[in-house]
Image (cartoon, rainbow, N blue to C red; front, side, top):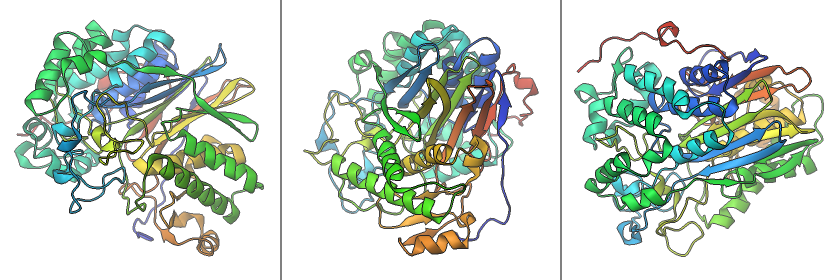
Length: 535
């Protein structure tokens, strides 16, 4: 592994204010969300504005064509709620279209490979996306501002264009083989048949038009009416089984959270079909087997690793996984967290699944589409096997909110496939086991463990801790890098109920990740200038 690659020390400071904060994998999206707080919106408005802005500035991770979960803490009601907007398979899907092929690699979810990777690439890998329905439900039930106002920053960003920096060029370069398969995707992201260079803007006019339509007509326009007909038409022209009836039938679900307790706090997660059960299982093990001292030590990492391994073993049995963990080099997805002055909090995770999802950009709408058919086991008879109309019922996404004495104290979550639960669980444990600040927890070295036969450890934890870990586990020593993302990519917010002081913090090793406090969203003042798009 990469024990000694990057020769610098990286640190980010948490942002803080009395009025709230938003944290995201892209700083521009965080600022778009925080602007809604400045306009009088609450944490739900801010989180949804941030999520919509990511359609433009981080499109390879999430967007209108994706799905996910949202955990909401209502300060006045002292209640947590979950919005499940996971994708749904087309009613007409046929498992015969996904024959097993031992020559293909395991899928991202570690199921056996499928011929031509049909469940991971192209139109056959797309599920009915739930993002617009879920975000719209959250705003309608829990937001304060009008829907069109919440979408305004995303519309402005789309009209200006996707700003390409070196990190964006890296993301596109990693997916060039996939993007070359799709004419609309290649035109947008591969001008001149190569990855769009840093310093360029890539305007997505079809996406801008779609966002304007949604802003004007509301979230149901995605599922019913002319826009839905255009989406279904593009999908079927490309070979998808998704119909206008599949779109019209889609509804997001509002649920009670899956909750547990740890060190005097209540921990609220996104439910049984999220990564929440594994997070709570890990915390249960830690509570029973670790007596935290004044500081993190080798015993901390041993307990966390054993707790994670046990939680993942239970999960694998539940979903019928019989494959070893395999070599994982980081997944995709995006997480954002928000808090407002009243103490409302949101933890929101949504995804296209793989980087650039299916690799399909729908020509009529400019949307990148998910490849969430890969969430399902291509083998029949298992709990997560393919079936028409079935909602995704097993996910790593793990948005989490912790409360104490009826007040929200932090919201965290992460991206990165199987790395999500280990990261989110450790941050939750560090904050509650050791009373850390959000900034200190995000800068504490982490491990990654998921019952794969080894434990990955950041060498920043020191030789003594590594030596002790090696007495108990096969250890892969690996730095926390920009790429590959071996320890996930978290974003979080925190609030002190006694003072009302709020904090926001984003992953230190994600160069474009950032947090923001309430302020107007002025694109002209954001310091992002780009050259004319290059052909």
